[in-house]
Amino acid sequence: MKKIMTILATAMVALMLVGCAKFGDVQTSGTKWKKTFILDGTKASVGDNQYSRGFSALSSSKKCSEIETTITLPIGDDNIFEASGKRSVIGLAFDVHITTVQGKDYYDFVLVGVKPSDGEFYVEKYERISKDELKEDMITIDSAINGATEDNASGPSFTSLDGKSSGQNFVTSKKVNITTTAESKSFTISVTQTSKGVYVVKNGETTLGTYDRHDDLSSEETSAGKAYGQVFTYGNAPKGTKIKAVFESDKNKTVGLFADEEEW
Image 1 (cartoon, rainbow, N blue to C red):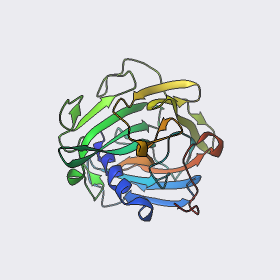
Image 2 (cartoon, rainbow, N blue to C red):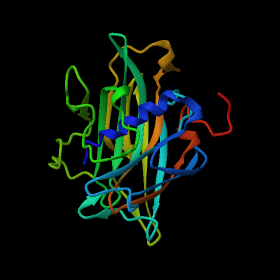
Image 3 (cartoon, rainbow, N blue to C red):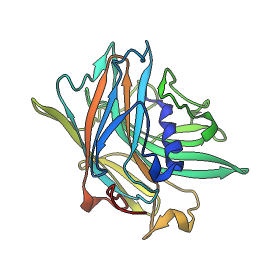
């Protein structure tokens, strides 16, 4: 469900730099400005109560501070958004970066996940996730990884940033505004910074959540007065579902996101 902590494999990709732009059971095509992302949870390899998960880099480096992207999903055989009561998820992971505690590297990041079947969403921060605990098969029954618990002060942790309670009990009816036609579903997600390290996640003009990266930022983690990290697309396909989505990013509203052919 919402504690889909296998997103943590995003951090592993972040270490592999440009040479490994995707991870998990995912197919991609196109450029970073217009990337097609496909996950298939209908394959025989996905068992009961399992999820196929995948990630694909949008920013080749860690130097992405703001982004706006429109996610479009075709309706029909290319997508099955819900099966056996379980719903697929599509979204972004941003501000992926490394923290070091007692000489050991951990990963922090924020995930924006949207359920295209009805627009329910979550915005969650993940902290202190060990590289050693990341799964590589990306077909898993895990609802959490590495023993992550909510707001854990010392160990692996996830924290809700969207004003909703954990699990299935929502304290607000706010949903992502999805434009639906006979051919597709689409919605836009933006991540901006009001000041260095203070992120705001929006769907159009509606704020979905905020994130204050309150830790000390090194000069290598800042540029032009803003924090930056790596950005990935994310998908989660429970058994019986399929996701095909096109992520089209606005170059004029994105800072630090570069096309595939550019050098680093």
